[in-house]
Image 1 (cartoon, rainbow, N blue to C red):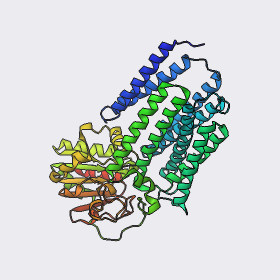
Image 2: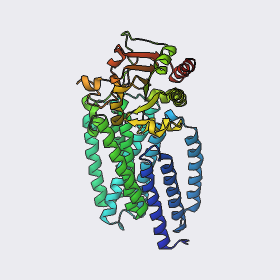
Image 3: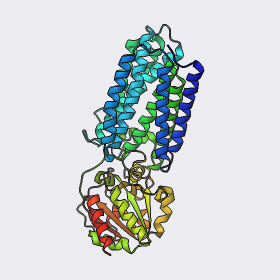
Image 4: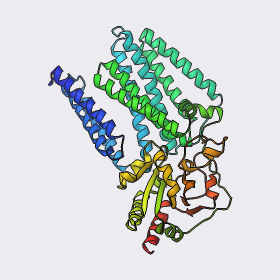
Length: 462
């Protein structure tokens, strides 16, 4: 028996949809991201409550058990996950959403006894949801395995990958048309299996610096499958929420690809023609100017303006709190400190913003690439912490380089550049950074957190 009237149900869903829209608006800025996240969570909780109260649930006990098990697994995982592993968690969230939408569509098709009570629009939505949802799930799992380094992060190009990919897509589309024409659950299940294969083949050739873009694209796929699932179930809220995620994910994917100076197609299929970032472990033997923490402290302590460029190495070392302490120390000495954030720094969209927000870095100190690039010309010292490809001049000077055409942070315009690196291994693009050998560049080798702690202690002693 329904505890809510039809009007109350629609009003509840409308309020939840408004929460989702406000959440996206809040997530557009680091200053309001936390509030936006809470608003989105409140909207999801409201939607769940309305769904429970507005209809007769035939399988209430299994539903409650599933929610309890999911909560028991998700809450500890989310609380215990390290910041360096956050991209992996996001990838899994993407995949689970797409996989769930595909399963719901399959079950709904089974309820219609082979499609006899479904109209053509429903069957088209079912075919789309099953195919794209399976692609999103399988692709996200592969992305997780790459990020977790369970498998290689380098592009994996199978023998005959190009014809296999084209053949897989053609066969999948053919089966999708068959599902649309017949509504047979067996064909829909086959379509799901084909989607899993296509998802694996789609992500295997992607590696290195392309991973954040793939995460964003798969997130858009998941949103679109949820929207199509809402159409199948006749649920307006799912349709609205999925469309919001799909649209925002698509926009973000295009923006990130533009930030790398590449097309989305080039990112996804570049390895098939030898153009994707490949990642390398080769160590350069060319001489560089190595300095001590005390040397870096002197450069920083007597500067007027310092810009910090964070990268994945900062996240690996969990050095965000130490860099925040150093920033406060320098500000106390009257030194201007800014952070230069590249759109694809890290392993997922906004990775550096999240990392620095965790350390309570002032939002006004975070400058995006277009905003911070003019600042380098008036900067005394740039401190590059765990970043490489996003400051590599090869993006402008080497047409054959995998990152050629990617806009970079113009750190070479500063008076002095200090790199904090573990070793001379190149970034994920697998190419040397000529800036490391520039006379104005110094390198401080070691774990970023330990190095920054030593620099901080040395600054205090000035």
